[in-house]
Image 1 (cartoon, rainbow, N blue to C red):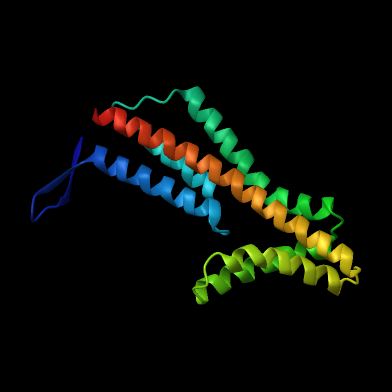
Image 2: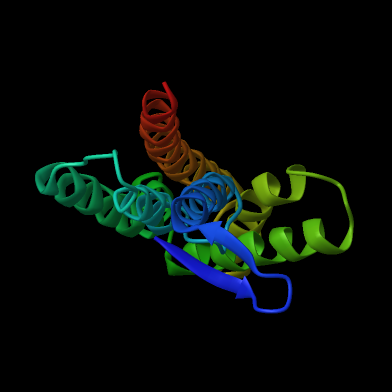
Length: 181
C-alpha cells in the first residue's frame, strides 16, 4: 500500500515502513516514560505493539494484544497507587503523599531546567514526603519512614513500568527481526 508524500517530487513511501518507524518510536517513548514521570509509559509501549500488529507479516493474536493491553492498563494505574501505598505503609499521612507528589513534580522541573540528571527525580519524592510530614507536625523519625516509603514506592513503580516497556520492545524487535529474515 503506497501514498504520495510529495506531489512535486513524486516520492512514494511504503506504508509498512511508516508503521514500523511509528511502532519503534512509540515503544521508545514508552521506555522513556517508564523512567521519566509525566510521560505515560505503558500506554505508549502498548501502542507500539498495536501499531506493529498492522504490518503485513506480523501476526499478534487478539488474545495477546488484549492481555498486553490489560497488563499495561493495570501497570498504568499501579504507577499512581504504589508510591501512595509505600508512603502509607510506612506510616505516612496525606501530607506526606502530597509532599511526595509535589517533590516529584519539582524534581522533574529541576531536572529539565538544570541538567543534573536523574538525581532530582529520585530525590524529589523523598524530600517532598519528608517536608510534607514535618510541616504536618509528624515527628522526625516518622517523617523519615514516610519519605523512605515514598522513595521505595516510586522505585517499585518505575521498575514495573520499565519491565513492561522492555517486554514490549522485546516483542517488537523480535518480530521485526523475524520479518526481515
